[in-house]
Image 1: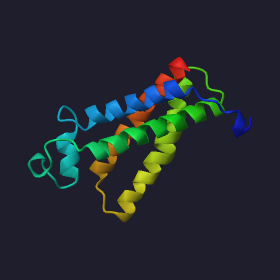
Image 2 (image 1 turned 90 degrees about the vertical axis):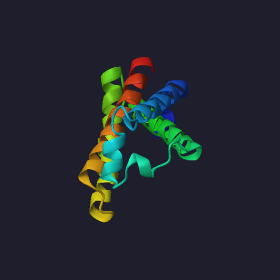
Image 3 (image 1 turned 60 degrees about the vertical axis):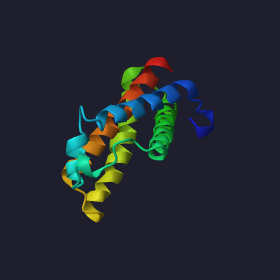
Length: 138
């Protein structure tokens, strides 16, 4: 198979990207990991902005959609068929790329293991949701 033959369903990938973004919205919310995420950075809620900033959220949305498009391309390139293959494609991206790139933060930026775990677990779950959606509906 060559790369020219990859034709992902962009609408489904877009929906998966929005779902990935939504997972992040919940993941970093007070109902889940806000306090632990802030503590892992040496911060508290009192020392941070009260309202989310529009530009970082917009950039996050764009990045989530791009990642979902990459998952869709891997799914299609591998001849994916169903939800399990969508999740496998998402694991290639989330564990094989995102988690390993984020791991460099431990080595070079004095990132804490807790911050690494929270951020990487979000990537694995969020990208997994995008991959599952793509596999279910593509």
